[in-house]
Each structure stands twice: as structure tokens, then as C-alpha cells.
Length: 373
Figure: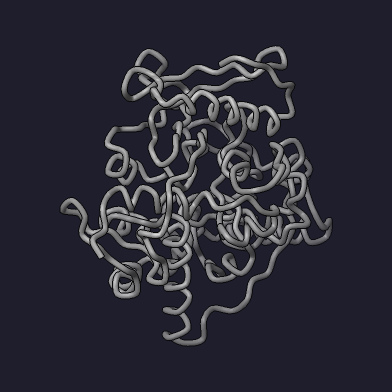
């Protein structure tokens, strides 16, 4: 069967934006949800889940986290993932936090980590402030060039290595508890099976993928399994053999073999997506599917922004036709829109569906309803 770009667009939208379900089932189906601390108007993890979970409100994930059987950890980026997936990645013996490089820890840091781990085990769960008041390790230069408390920095590094887990949060601050992971795979076959399983999870989230994007996605698993990063190149070749493939517009596209690209109908709704949503996450794939360049500009100096601080792609049916910048002022939702074609779509149902999406956003943010765009 001839696969077209229209088929791929519908497929990309419909398979990711599945029918809303419970929070637990949505997390199990996704496997991984990217996290980001910016609230504009809510955090990325909440904005991702609101499309996929019935009656979801901003903050539900953090509030219910201890009961969901999930963990915070690095996958292709940092986020929330189910425990069976996390178990595939650990133990990360002698692994440094991605921003620090892959060098082994010096002996002094290893000693501090052991003492800190004993402290956490003795207390059950700890706030970084509690740890810092006990150890007073001073400050260090953090990943962004600023200054962080050394104990907070070490807690994050121990979490990445698998010595600690995030037990929950207080006001957005991680609360840590001790963690133990199982043994490393006993032989080569079991190690390769783990790597392949992680690759399949990533593909399941972000497919369909053009060849270069698939390669980049597999390389990003170096954050998940730094101990096996040298084996990811061969894992890429293996996954290409497992996936379905079609050449569309001179580009090779890949997706899970059991899925039928051509069976999806375009949805009839408007969706405002976080820049980190799986539908728009890969910017190169975005440009191939929708024909224009989208950029996340939160870290771009204001005078150089073209779309806005946190421009949310505006999905109409199976087309991303523009973007929106949302904020809450005086308890009301404020929205500003931009369009690829310089104006909103002519379709009369577009305005109705956009109003419905803004009402869903107000419900999600727990603010009052209002009319007008």
C-alpha cells in the first residue's frame, strides 16, 4: 500500500492522542512523560497528560505520584516513567550525571555519597534542606553556570546513579529516599534484550519517525543507559529490522511493525500542545510533517522571539496551523494566537472547537469559564 505524508500526519496525531483514560492507564500506555519546570500556564508533564487523562487537573501527577507506581528519572530526557521501564536502565554503576560527563567519581565524592546515603536510610525520606543543614558541604557550580548547594547537587547525582529515588515533592522540591536496584544482566543476550526493550519503548512514544530522527532518538538513550552507550549504534541497526518502513517524499519513515498507518481518520478537534508533547517533540519531524519551523523560545532573548516565550503548537484536526501563548491573569485565562497562514482557518467549526479547547484548558487549570477568544 502506498503511504503518503497525509497518512503519516494522521497516524502521528491519532496514535499519540489516544482516547482519554485513567491516569494510571495513561502512564502505563505512554511509559514515559517528559518533565519541565516552566509553568506557562502549567508544567509540561501536566500539559501532556491533560489530553490523555479524563478530568485531569494541573498538579494531579505530583499529588498522586506516591500511589502511581512511577519514578522520576532520565530516559531520553528527564521525566516520569513506569518502574518496569526504569528497571531496564539500572544499575548505572559509576555513571556521572549527563551534564557532568561520564568520568568516574573521585574518591572524596564517593565517600560523601556513602555518608549521605547512610543519613537518608536512617531518616527514611529527606528534604535537601535537611541534608544541607546536617552536612554543610558548601556550594558548587551547577549545570547552568550558577551556584547550587553541594548537597543538593550530590543528591541529584546519587539519584541519577540509582542510589536514591524521588519519593515525592514538597512545593516542587524533590524529597529523596534510598533505593536499591537489581543486578546487572548476567550475560550478553540479557543485556541486549534490555537495550532493545528500551529502544522499543522510545519508538512506541515518538513514532512514526524519519530515519535521522530515529537515529537521534536511539543516541539519546545514552542518558538512560550510559553504561551501554557504546552498544546503541548496533541497537539502531537491530530496531530498523524490527520496524515497518516506507519511503515518503525521499525520506525513510519507521514505526512499530504491528501498526497500520493508513487506518486512522483525522480528528475533528483543536488541541493546544506543550512544546514537549510527543506529537511535536522532535522538531525535525515536526517540520517534515507540517511544513514549517517551530522553535521553543523560552530561553531566547525576548527581542529575538518570533512565536513567544512558551508558544504552544495549535493542532487543528491533523494540521498544526499556528500557536498560542497562554497565561492566567486575575483568575482568567488570557490567550494570544498566531497562525502559519497569517489568519485563523476559514472553517466555521474551527472557532467552535477552539472555544471548546480553551474551556478544557480552564477546567484543567481550575479557573472560571468565560466567553470570547
